[in-house]
Amino acid sequence: MPKALPPSDVQNVVDKFKKGLHYSEIHSQTGVSTGMISRIRAMHFPELPKHSGGHPSKLSPTNICHATHLLTGPAPTTPCLVAQEISSTNGVPVSSLNVHWAVQKAGVVPFVKPKKPAMTKEHIKACYEFAMAHQHWTIDDWKRIQWSNETKFNRFGSDGHHYAYKGLARHLSPTRSSKHHKHGGGHIMIRACMGWEGSGLMCKIDGSLTATPQILAWASMQPLLDMEKVIFKQDNASSHKAHVVKDWFQENGLEVFEWPANSPDLNPIENLWDQVKRELYSYETPASGMLESWEREAFQGLKDALTNVPVLCHANPTKPYFLEADASGAALGSILSQHQEDGCLHPLGFLSESFKGAKQNYDMHDKELLAIMRSFEYWHIFLEGTAHPITVFTNHQNLEYWKESHTFNCHHTQWHLLLAGYNLQIVYHPSKQSSKPDALS
Picture (cartoon, rainbow, N blue to C red):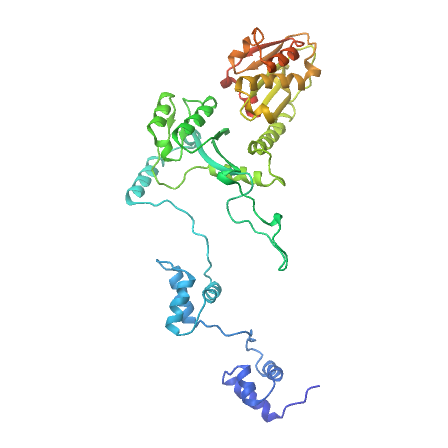
């Protein structure tokens, strides 16, 4: 048990507290231990706040107020420059971390500057006039807009920093390094559009974003657009303003939504890109091809929609079958259907596959034929020995006469022999009339 202090020593410590001295100063002047000084403070001055300890701040309240003004003023600076100014004024070395922690306690926190377009007075005036011209647009007016944009998809994560942890004595392992591909590998550029009715076709852009790839991308989306009702929205990039692009829009009768240059991005498809990228990066292993992850997501959504009762039906061998097949550059898709009591075609099943290996190099004619051939292989249990001819719908008109051709390559010969056992007729069906197999491909 500690020895009690004489009343005179206790009174001496109390007097020192009343003068506002700190523990170290009272200890050096009285010789009383800091533990005893703490007990005297708790007994005689319980209302005094407990000292937090540590080195006293190098920044006075005036310095903190000045630093806050510099960091949040009209000409913002950095903690490093503020620390240099305070050090030269006070004659005491102050680091940027001292400034950072001090202003953070005062309620000033750092943030990443958002990127905004460089706006001149002319740009601001044009944006104001645009807003005034469209302030009375109704929801039905905005429903006509077909929002279009391009984005880059990375196969191996984002372009930013990737963080990992390792022990102090451990060497860098292969699993703790980010792999990169030379000459821009590991990503693709995609253009797509969306409207009130939903998302449109996704199209890969090969090469740089010049006028020609843009026209090819828009041309691939054209069959899905109602030219008389749609107003097309683009992002005012230089390749979009080229004369050849404007001429293409005019020749195809597509109205373009005009909006001011350098204005803040008015494009909700950016939110769709964000959602797709989140889904892409959520897989435990990277997709073997960039379109594989899009195929997984889109195909799963179609499966959920098509398998809801009463859409999907059972096969009836007494009724004729209808097969809709299509192919894209990366995959094939088909739907097997039959007429039901309501007079409409209802799907019995659906097929979607990516092209692998050498099949990726087939031309579009052979890929369309491969889509038909794979459909008959997949549903052979239903399609062999049917009483009625199987109607095969295709959006390639020249396939109607394929069976009557007299010259075949090796692939055509094999497929001709396989399809010879089926009672089928190929019918040209324009892609504008049905986009279901096109979506699966």
